[in-house]
Amino acid sequence: MSKLWKIILYIGLSLIIIGAFVWAPLEPKILKEYTRIFYFHVPVAWICVLFFLIAAYYSFQFLRTKDLLYDAYAKISNELGILFAILATVTGSIWAKVTWGSFWNWDPRETSIFILLLIYGAYFSLRSAVEQEDRRARLAAVYSLLAFVTVPFFVFVVPRIYFSLHPDPVINTQGKIHLELRQRVVFFSSLIFHTVLYLWLFQMRKTQVKLQMILRLYKENKMLEE
Amino acid sequence: MKQIWLIFLKDIQQEFKTRYAINAIMLFAIVTLSAVSFSIGAYTATTRVLAALFWIILFFSSMSGLSHIFIREEETQTADTLKLVARPSSIYLGKFFFNLILLILLEVILIPLFIAIMNFKVVSFQIFLLTMFIGNFGLAGGGTMVAAIISKASTKGALFTVLSFPILLPVLISGISATRKAAESVKLMDAQNELQALLAYGVIIIVASILLFDFVWNE
Image (cartoon, rainbow over all chains, first blue to last red; front, side, top):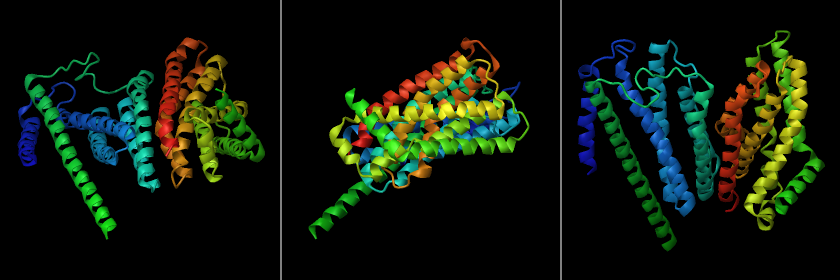
């Protein structure tokens, strides 16, 4: 099953790379050659938010059931989230350099991704500071949820206070997307395949963590028998 | 309600015996203020810079004192007794009100000093004091909750600032913006967005903390 997904992903992502660089037309006025990074930056940023939501969900599940497996899921979700947050920051930064002239200028979106990175960093430093396993899981889950309730402020409030440079030429305020047909095909398939990539990565890590737990339980039981 | 009041009184009394938190927080504020003042010198900074400096001093001085309230319970090993006698939500609220008073005391000292030393001209005291008042709720609410988390961890000092910063950043951002407006315009409506944001943040963080505090406190 996982092998089939791997093949689908391999073909799909290759097609998207070809599509983004060769097939899709460029936006002629402002972005020109820089249109291409759009097909990768937006999906990566979307996945990083997705991982953050999933981590909050599993943290909530952990507090409800006290099952350490959920804590492990929240942890791997945050681990993968930090990877994608870095990718989104780097691609966004490159894009900002070529269109706005500087790598970093505290645009509200840049601020929010930076906060996301800070939260991830704080989450892992909290985990490393607590030794007892169940206590660590509890504190990390509480922190994850506490951070989760502050995120709406960065999404809705900060852009109202600070002026944004983020692209309205492509995605305007009404949420409509002005794209040509071929751009649209590449963009949405890129979004879909990145989501599949996300599901595949997460599923793989979940299985790994589950196996680790079973193995540990087995070892503990064996030691008890001896 | 009575429990909240009793815990609050107990903390005040304990604080009067040692005066640890109040000393730490006040001296930290004065030291940072003089450091900032020395390094700026005679040069008069713009209101934008001054508003940011004010909130940085306020934030880091509160970081030096707010965590003490829960760490003290762990260090003197009174946390378990407290667990037996009071409900978690009233413990949180009692500690929250203590931290709120601590912050207000800090501001009573810091605001006149800052205005005098840094030559910060406040046009609208209405906006300024309202920002401080509402902002305190957010700072104390978030700070108390992170302090509770920290008190269970093995390294306490530096971790508190690291964990609080992302949580409290909305207060800092809206606070700086509102303070700048207090120095620029007289109309209360100009700072409406920021004050609304601060109020909403305070309410949300306190409600979320009361709901989550149970999981931190009871093992």
